[in-house]
Image (cartoon, rainbow, N blue to C red; front, top):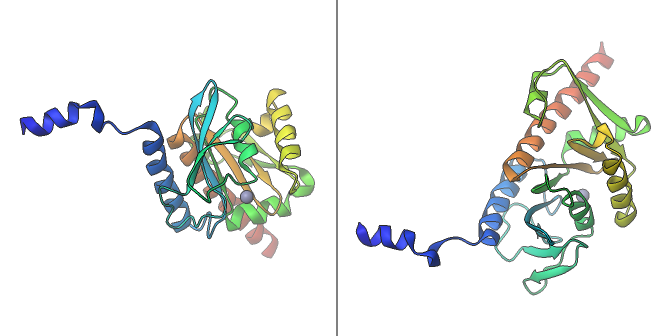
Length: 226
Ligand SMILES: [Zn+2]
């Protein structure tokens, strides 16, 4: 027993931040896959390892989210350049969105999903450029929201393959304290980006928002069928 306690106290057995973040992101990826929020190789996830200088652990491009291995991650700097990667692993094109969001000290993780409901709603409401969520108890799961008697706005951007341009637009609207980028944003017919102070909060935001997207889209469908 004493021997086990001694081993636990031995610093050689303390898990590195990279290894802990890898395991945590593998769990998140599997959960989101099982919930149909990011099937196949879709979606990407990151955890901030350091803020100054910025260093992120991010899922590598083109890896199946059903079973990410320890080799399916890369470490990148604040510009999205690879610092460390297994042979053949490279950051996805969308990594630049993760790095611009992670520039804020209050962001510890960024999660991007491609669910049925976020794809549908971001397309249906694209002309409005914003999705408004009001009156739902589940809104209280979002950081800083304490009552259902509120409206949370989620910005909708046009889809593009020019990720650096989209990243610049996102950054400038966050810098301008745009309320529609307080918790998340949508990209038309593509998916959701949300973040949190740590991975647990970012994951909770995905869970809350995906619930609210489904409620909103089902309500629209029911209302139009009446
Ligand atoms: Zn995507």
